[in-house]
Image 1 (tube, rainbow, N blue to C red):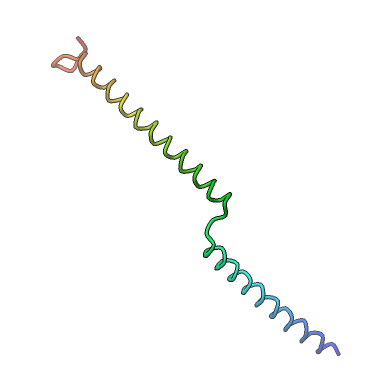
Image 2 (cartoon, one colour):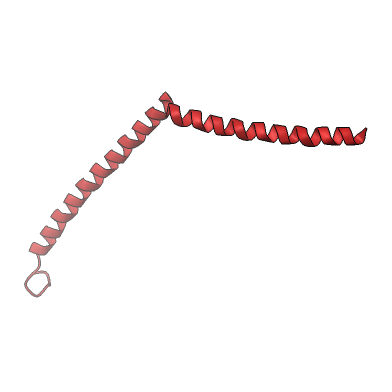
Length: 83
């Protein structure tokens, strides 16, 4: 009697494990085919906008630093010291 129960538990757990693996694989395939959800697309667009704003800010900062370097270089003499 105990052997029948043990065999049922072993085969039942193997069947449950196989079902979980197949379900996970099918869910991944479905998610890949459908792409992002509408909220995921909005989040991705917001993230892209933030990255673009950071890039624009860094470009402006680079221009300001170049202007400051030019001002500093104009204030120096030929020997490298300030006038």
